[in-house]
Image (cartoon, rainbow, N blue to C red; front, top):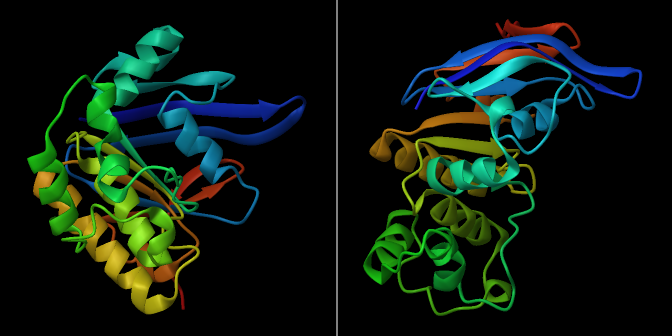
Amino acid sequence: MSLVIKHLSKHYGTVPVFRHVSLHVAPGEFVAIIGESGVGKSTLLNCMAGLDSWDSGSVLLDQLDLSTQSDDQLARLRREKTGFVFQAFHVLPHLSVAQNVALPLMLLGQHDDARVHAMLTEVGLHGLGERLPQQLSGGQLQRVAIARALVHRPMLLLADEPTGNLDPRTAEKVMDALINQTRAHGAAMVLVTHSKTAAARADRTLLLTADGLVDHFDQD
């Protein structure tokens, strides 16, 4: 799935968040977006998914203009075509690990225990499907979130600071799982991060400023 953003601008009231953002993410490509706090990285990610509105410009997924879609159509598009990984995990504490991972399939009216358990194995959580989230570490919970985001085989994965709460060693393992699984499924991925280490693993790293996205070349 290709993602094309053209001249996107967003304001909160009279305060500009970002403007003139343009981006093309090819199928299977991994793009990292960095930038200072408050510049609108998470808001931009939400716009890519049709979760947030914008003031001008366009967001197209496989040539489908999100601004022309109803709320129901956007929800269906997200269920079928996109996956999300957030810093805060967002797992449901009253469901088992396997049940959390199975949620995207359930929303699509599908039931596939074999795929759920295979996904857990692929992210290094074999045999932990019956545990509750509170029985897992932070790194394990983030891998649950990755498995859940990918179990329905989306063509676009959006990840918002997925390693922000993790120690460096665990963060590396989470990034390994994230990259390996998106590559295996041929999914495009957009990663928002403050981590230079995580961003360095992307095919491209872009810097978000108030005036748009620019190619980032680390001078350190």
